[in-house]
Length: 163
Image (cartoon, rainbow, N blue to C red; front, side, top):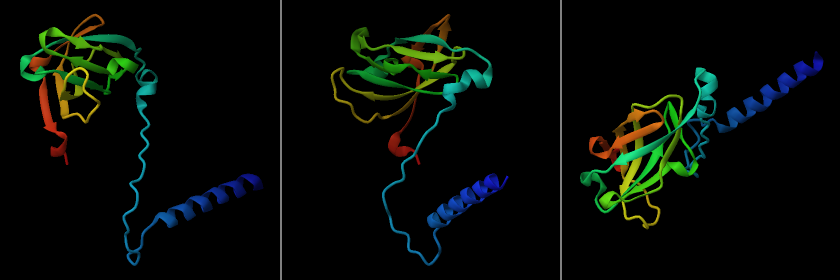
C-alpha cells in the first residue's frame, strides 16, 4: 500500500512540476519559439469496435467534368466517417479525354453518401504541390462500387480563405 501511495505522489509531483514549468505568468514575456508538434490519434483504427459495424472495401469510379478537370485534376481522398483511405488508393489523377491514373480505394463501415477530396489542377507528371482546397462530392453506390460525378461536386474555399 505504501508503494502505491508513494507512486501516486511521485506521478502527481512530476505532472505538477511539468504543468508549472509550461505555465506563463504575466511577468514573463512571451517569446516566439518553434511551433509545437501536433500528434493526431485517429479513432478510425477502431471504428468497427466503436460501432459494431464491419469494414468493407469500396472502389470509386469518376465521371469527369470538363469544368473542373481542365488539363488534369489531382485528388487526394480525405478520411472521414464512415471511411478511411487505403494506402495507394487515396491519390487519383484524372485527365482530359477520360484518362486517369490511380484508383480510389477506401474502407468503409457502409457506403458513404458524400466524400471529400483535396484538389488541384495539374498535369499527370507534375511534381507534388500544395492542393487548392476541398472538393465535396455526392456519391452513388452499387454494391462495393462508388460513382463520383465530378460535375456535381462543390468546391470549397481555397486554403488561404480558411481562418
